[in-house]
Length: 337
Image 1 (cartoon, rainbow, N blue to C red):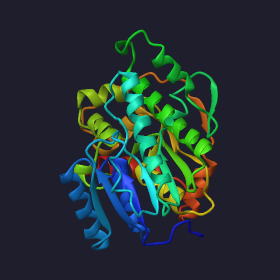
Image 2 (image 1 turned 45 degrees about the vertical axis):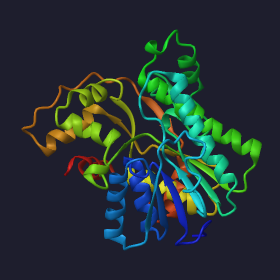
Image 3 (image 1 turned 30 degrees about the vertical axis):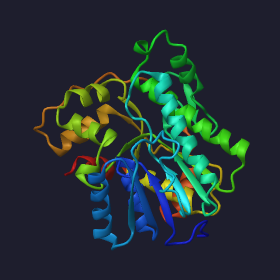
């Protein structure tokens, strides 16, 4: 395995206390790197540092507190001297104000890129994008989600909406991730920075939490369905009832591979392991706890989608993995504490 950056190098991870960000930090430390964890919350950042150093020893994690990711100078100090940047932080407010959310995501991405371009030590830049920058779920037709597919349709939709009230939170989120990622590749094309850029596009990300207080988003939604929480149940029985899932540790590995593997350059790494339908989740939950009260199954749509994730599988192989982590292991780890 030829490495783009040597072991013990410092990697800046923004959004490091989030569900995905915390696992990315974990995977870097596990692989022998040091992490500078950028976060807004001192308590969570301290917890992350404690969890990782308890497992891997001291002096592996530094904390960089960030008050506003859209501030052009937010990362001025945090970025100094690092060998790579993994930019996970994003606007996850799920506001329907498209221009504000899109503006925040683009500003944050561009700010970190511009700072990185001024740092001669930086060799790699990896952005956490999303499967929704490829497409929202498509039914009743043949489609292959792949690295050359872009969700420009949703960007046009939210920008042409009569008002923010007529947008849905997920459409705006999808548009922000699409425009944010496109802005990165446009920066690369125009500015030609000295570092290599890759992006990672997670789909519905589930699996264990590094710590119960570092969980969030999709992990909590699945637990919410299991525990009868109304908002999570509505999401997973409705808008998120069918698509593709992926294990959070595999997503962390894709970020690390995109950072450290020498031959991974200019890639969009899709994080799609297998299709899911909420009925499958309900079946597994019933097997785990036959007496638990769960929602009734729903009528499913015709999902004929396929995925071209060959590049991602090569990255996992480069890190010693045979493929995606399996469904049973993933779901039970998500629900098991």
